[in-house]
Length: 467
Image (cartoon, rainbow, N blue to C red; front, side, top):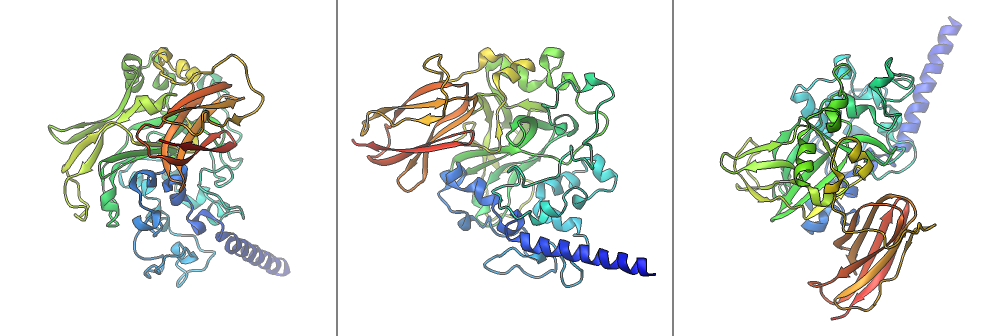
């Protein structure tokens, strides 16, 4: 009896400690800070605010999805995250599991996958979110992150020791990649996108997309572990402007048997992959195409590798809703074509496939168009960003920079208020010294700033346009 009492007390203390730490960490967790939406939306990260000119507060993105919390009570105004977002605190203890439906209120892509009856081996086995996403994922670990894709923000992964950490294929030929490919690249049957968000409707707090599309897996390199990983995207239009955000995505559509084999990704191993076939023929991947004659959308099926020159080569048709932005959300063909050009392309926590990776899956790298090549054969020892010359200038100036290690490089131009004006560079670089010419025709006189981001290196310089 004494042993039983001690066991109960220890269990109680364990639960108490777990609850105490969960409460202490919640304020810095992503659920507590709500950093995810602002991080991808803000102009400082090349988000859609760049094109819309509207702050995130103006578009209600910080409000929680729905109108009531887990207790059925209306959210306070202004909205502040709290435990009752997920926990029915009036009827349950904090130790009681959170309802799966509470998770799906906010994680709408996962909800859509379930509603569309796309199978997942874990759900079939009875798993819910909390089977994989433990307290640190949900309540935080004491560190503040910008996104769930930040290293350390989410612990759950296929390779967890408690999951598949010790698993190896019985036949080595099944997995010849030496750990360079994430499990989901082969075992996720599909990803999902709510295609073409109509941003004018978002201002009425209505989430209107042309359709939900599946049947594709975009392949990128996830920066968290530098593994080839599935990605998905959100395309958006507002007042004739077009924008796409893309990043890694673990779709919960995992299959145990029937995973992809070599020919699903390798055109040069006998596969027939529409995205690769088109790129090899035209140098373009037209991911999605709108048919104005019957108001239907078609899109690439299967794997879609994101090429190193994706800013030029990855295209999709952007649409706008022709009805009133406050119309009820129902299936509709009342859409029309705007453009297949992206005014903004935001790639976060991922980089495109390298030329070597493209060649390995049978893509014609002679079709790759890169404006920017090293100016000499020397490999610098450090990252650097030079001062533009001449400065002041009109209308052109030269910018030099050095990259000691191959990787993705961005150079963005900002005005004096910190608003993104233009992306000057946004592509994969080999190690080397570089020089670009910036022509400011069309810009007004004034002070501007240009900033480089490459690996963990960031530097900013001031330039003056004087007309």
